Amino acid sequence: MKTIIKLIFTSLLLVNTSCFEDVDDEKPLEEPIEIIVSEDVAVYNSDEFYDGYTLIAPVNSTNTYLVNMEGFVVKKWESEHRTVSAILTENGELIRTYPITNSVFSFGGRTGGIEKFDIEGNLIWSWEYSSPEHTLHHDIISLPNGNLLASVWDFKDANEAIANGRDTDLLIDDAVWGERIIEIKPIGTNDAEIVWQWELWNHLVQDYDSTKENFGVIAENPDKININYTSGIANLSHVNSLFFIEDFDQIAFSSRRFDELMVIDHSTTTTEATTNTGGLSNKGGRLLYRWGNANAYNAAPAEDKLLFGQHDVTYIGNSPNHGGNFMCFNNSRSATESSIDEIAIPISANGSYNLLPSTANEPSDYSWSYISSDIFAPRVSGAKRLANGNTLITQGTEGTLYEINEASSIVWQYKIPLDVNDVFKSYRYPSDFSGFEGADLSVKNIIIE
View 1 (cartoon, rainbow, N blue to C red):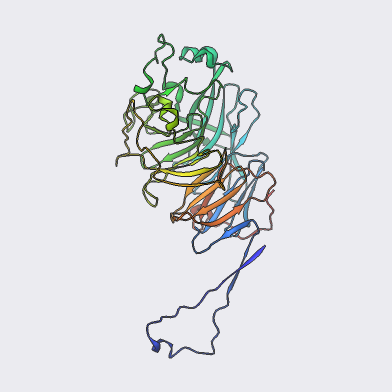
View 2: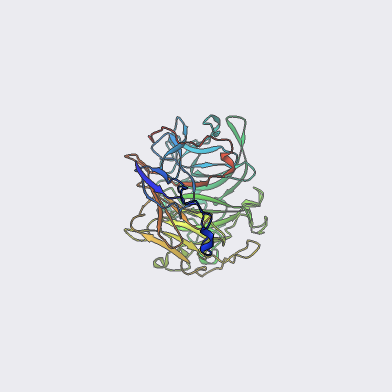
């Protein structure tokens, strides 16, 4: 541990010399405050960081931790399972996903189970959605109504893939995994109802087989997904993050295999989400916008790509930010560097977009970037905009968290003290977060393991 001495001085109004006439020369100044900082915190600038507590869920641990700015554990949740994604809700519940062995879906990011703990660490709900036909994977999001959003892989055999225009040369796994986003309503202690869903499989286009109903010109259909864009492994799109845009009732997600962020309408009914009409957008389940790789819909050459295996797409609005309204962790910006990028996607006041055919959609570049070899991570990782304008960065493959200010200076740095410390992403919650009400957040004698 290391000690930082922070000097606290009583206020002195230096207006003129008469201000000091009544000062008692014998009265001592207030004693300095000694702040003990863990050795795991390499940078600690309390004048500039966003004060609060950071949620970390190492993927090789069965525990989830809340740590203070000094790097000490103030809360621990114990589970029987390892995790991928973990979040806190505004009523103090921890939601975490966990992996279930599945002989069909073996790709990285597979989960299959979700569990919920109260603030005291008691397991209060769990649910599993895993079979040879489907499985949960990667991310989980809490909605304002108490429901959850999750991503699902669906197994499509070779016959179903061919019926939808899949190039037979791309069926090396004799299957395709479709992508589904579901809204889950928890029931009781171990059940749930899927109350809404969107399925990528309903919005495909292809130019391989003219006998199929979804045959068309790829570039003229940017609001649909080219089933033959990605290579022959079954994992077609690999959605690795979800974000709910409450202002417009939309969902933004990241597709690692398409190197794109995409936006869909959540205001539809499930039936409307299978069609081309309905919802606030009146576009049904079609893509409202996509960005990062116009080559995925034949509108630009591959070398014009701007996203590279990205994670953690978020909507940050226009305040505070550097001029963009979406942000992501761009994993492979170069062979040795990752970046945090803001993207100023044109969006109207009512949340509509202008998704144009046969062209690379705006913007043509990032509005702001933080790029560094220090944060390079070829997989996992994330970035969160904090309320004071700083950015919390999770370098996930080495378990190192950075907070940078608007000048891109590191004001806080923490490394998870485990030999294998991979982490999917992390979250910072302010000290007055409603979920902490009544919780004991004193430092505990707990070692991260």
